[in-house]
Amino acid sequence: MPDVPAAAPRLSERAAALRPRWRWALLFALGAVAATGQAPLGLWWLSIPAFAACLAILPALPDWRAAAWGGWAMGAGYFALALNWIVEPFLVDAARHAWMAPFALFGLAGGLALFWALAAGLSRRLRGGALGLACALTLSEALRGTVLTGFPWAQPGHALIDSALLPLAALTGPLGLTFALLGSATALGALLTGPRLPGALGLAAFAALFAVAGQLPPAPATPQDAPTVRLVQPNAPQHQKWDPAHIQTFFDRQIAFTAEPGQGGHARPDLIVWPETAVPVLLNNAEPTLDGIARAAQGAPVVLGLQRHDDRRLYNSLVALDASGRVSALYDKHHLVPFGEYIPFGDQLQKIGITAFAAQRGNGYSPGPGAQVIDLGPAGFALPLICYEGVFPQDVRAAPRRADVMLLVTNDAWFGENSGPYQHLAQARLRSAEMGLPMIRVANTGVSAMIDARGQITAQIPLNKAGWRDAALPPPMAPTPYARMGDLPMLAALLALMVLCCLYPVLGRRGT
Image 1 (tube, rainbow, N blue to C red):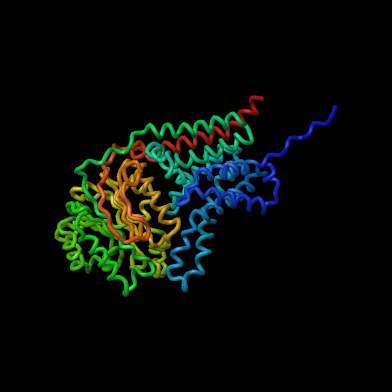
Image 2: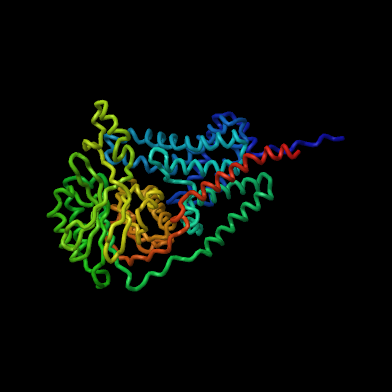
């Protein structure tokens, strides 16, 4: 009988046969392509085939060590592109700090990629296949959002924030969006390389999610008598923000925006919001400054960010001012940026004589007591968030009671002009969709926005534009399933599915 030619090797098998350095380079490049789903590009439809290739290659590698290295390469490429904005803070004073930018970018990308290495290695060791790997990667993203205070920025599921699937976050939270994207990638890989029936069913399930999202109720209409909030954006570039030659210019700009009559000749706003660290003096010495702000506000309450000290400790704070300029509410940021706002374990190092990093001696910010809700009068009860805190759904859910609105003030000038500000804005939209709460978001350089309870922007001031905007405050929705239960249902479902994926090959062998 004539010889039957062997079937052509699959792409995954060809990739697995490559020399390790070329295999790592391929996975690094595929990871970078997958990152194009993040804002501002938003190419989620390109992320899916890139992840599909990775999820096909990694389970085909010879052993768990090779898979772990491959997962690390994929993650390093992904985070290097997705988090390229991390170099921007080092360029504010480029003459002194620019040399550190490459180390920061690749150090951060390589460090975060360790979570994906753990997922890939463990999944390969347990023979979970592509679907098990998708579960493991999603679980590793949950881990990345909590370990060492967490850094859940640029999760794969964030690529779906600007898609019709955003409302699903009310049911599943961010982990559900991540698994939806990685699960669809798994299905695409199976459809192209086999087994085709499960792949087709998986893609059909992904398509069905769009129908489910479309059936969820929209955000309630904003009533005619809704409170009006003024967003104030001074547009202070970071290299000028604390320059004595420019400080007064930016402060006067905010005063002028605050004093403007209502847009279209309408009444004054019910609330005025300035961004993070908007006032160039400490709260302890700010009474004359706050009096001037109150006069400009002409009876409207004002919320603004500034710094304060208590004994030796320094705090990044938000205050609400009443009509007379008195502080009616005070909130201290509690989820600080490691190495940006404080040095981890700095207070512990003081015990052995190293005091240069101790926050309790004023070297960096000290954390506030935790999440709280403040009364903003006509605008209702607000959950204050300062910059980085808007990245963490667990910080939002930690509030002592359900708020009517989230209030985020930030200084996105640190993030540059490309991806960082847009990714931060996207995560603010995700928080609103998860919780069913509107958000007032005011940024120093933008994008300042009013966001409704389904995560849609109803008013905004563009990036790098000085200005103000009066916007009606959208109403909240009823507490969402995610607001009530958090990530626990998704974590349980992912763990159960991963166990099934790992048991399937064992049960299959026993059945034969």
